[in-house]
Image (cartoon, rainbow, N blue to C red; front, side, top):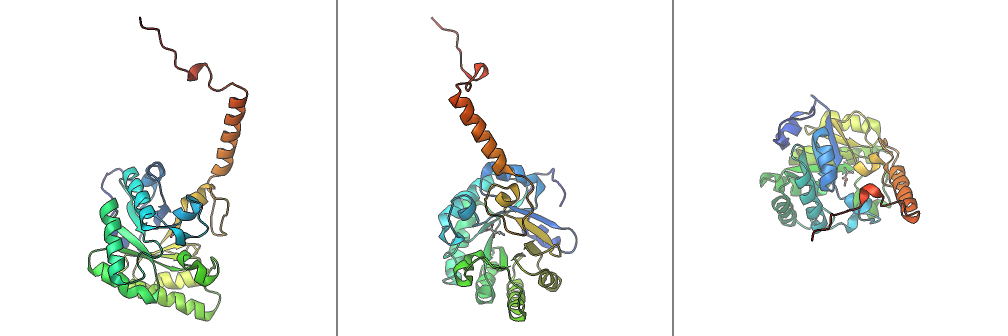
Length: 274
Ligand code: KIV
């Protein structure tokens, strides 16, 4: 969708209707000021559990809690007015049962005002997704490389090397599509597999490290702005904010040490009242 002028947010059906018509533009956001900067440029803002690694310094997303997602979700909702806002259900908040997933999703939606949740799940949890969708919770799926499965996989590993692995990812995508996901994140898969999945499921496929053949793209905003030190192969850096911040901090420190900050223009001088 082109840059907006209206204040009404993009809806779940709007995103679904873009499949095969227009590329869907998505980014992650975790704070109000960054959400405000991104809002007019994107169709969808994801409050991803990547927040654990890029903001909180956690080694994996598995330490992220529902409370953290809700706090960041509230900030992103306050900072945006145009994009559809989707919030990740973190590890441990949905796997135990469909009822647990429903309780977590309702809490996230009621306490933030977001329009949908994202669930990292394959065939095993397709029933949970269906349970939520049938009860009015829009769900975005997430298949392929699933960061919450980092300890099962032994790292963040791209998928699609063997026929078995390709069939497994295709089965995951088909299962969450049939369960009613309105869109599906497809992460870290071989180009040919991404093209095959995109052509064979009804929901829009939002790729990250999944080639240009997807219906849309998402990046972790901190990766594309260059604030996170580790950059996966599939990231294109659109800015180098690490260098910008480092330069700014160095110049500030030098000015304070040289007593040239604050200067004339940066101090309060009041006329004395008698
Ligand atoms: O948590 C996240 O930011 C995500 C994206 C990588 C899609 O799931």
